[in-house]
Image (cartoon, rainbow, N blue to C red; front, side, top):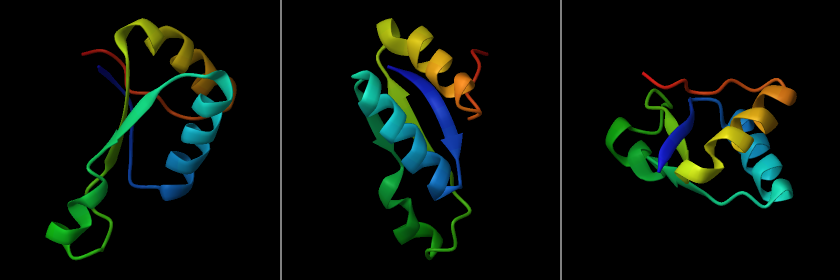
Length: 73
């Protein structure tokens, strides 16, 4: 799996998940329960992961809708 999005903004995460669902792209949300460690102040970002084969289309969908994407390093 590859990282598609890393953000602290819950609205970006919700929009990204809705867009990916609409396109039939499976994703996995990581770091959802990290708020237990950080005290629910939102400093640790959540990550959306997609399959390697879906990464290109997922990035296209995100960019077309004005959302940031994590680039390969």
